[in-house]
Image (cartoon, rainbow, N blue to C red):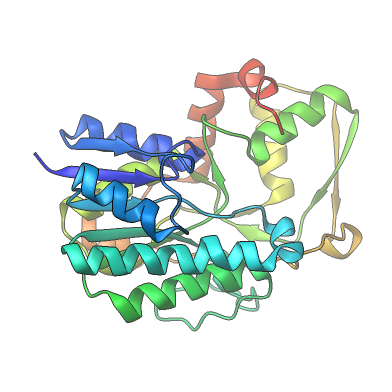
Length: 291
């Protein structure tokens, strides 16, 4: 039985990754930040010594994009130095490292989905720190897999969908950005995709998102229509009318052709994934999750 360690396992993706690999028969060690701090070499050494994993899936990250702008040192510590420390430990112990990265490594100037071979050019600290993490892993390891994904939603934490449902319960009008385009990705689908890549012993870089793309406004509109919420009016606005500390790429759709080539299939369209998520967890569940 293979032994798999999940970092950041209390997060939205980490929980689903642990569940999926457990069902596949792996002996799973799901460690939260308190149990394994990837920025502390002693913490990594202790966890590796205690659990002796064959595979690491690194879901630990500083993902609060706007907070990264004000906390650059913390962002680079978690998103770049931490993965480098994991990679060094994995090289020493011959462990296969899977690292989750982001669409925000791109600048959004394209109008066609980004391929793995396209040159990253992040425009915010979050994207810069995640790209640095990728670079350091590649410099240290040969036996690694970096999975880029985007716009995550899932049952184990706050996300854009839960925010929209909560706000719709409080307000009659919502202003939603309508000129940023990406691919909403269900954490359960992504976890299963990561597992499939691991089972196939894939190495290198792979983009993995639910197929098709939309704007934040289109996603919000789909969610309210799916939940038959008619008393909240959505107002589309451009990014310039919704200033945030961190710049966002206007287009960050990821091309999944390589994943399809490797596995023989793509992930389902985001609409199907969102519909399933809403059907299972619904409005009441969303409103119980703190923003």
